[in-house]
Image (cartoon, rainbow, N blue to C red; front, side, top):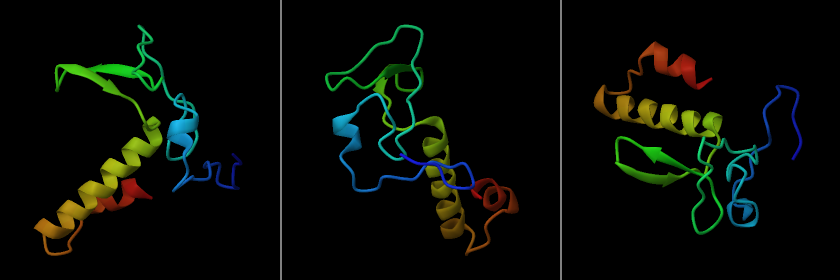
Length: 95
């Protein structure tokens, strides 16, 4: 794992990182956060309690990768709903 000039971690698309190292982000390789109880699933990935789902959820991506993925999804959805007119706030947040 190496950092580029912008300080972002190189992404590891198509890797088996999530299987080989369950304590690190399967997208970028960054360390996954752990909760106060340090619960893990059968594959050794950290888990958190989701109040929205009322169940334990495995963490596979670091907060940065998770947020980028969600923002990209919001941009795509707003493009579909509003004929390509993406709100400036979403466009700026994705950069």
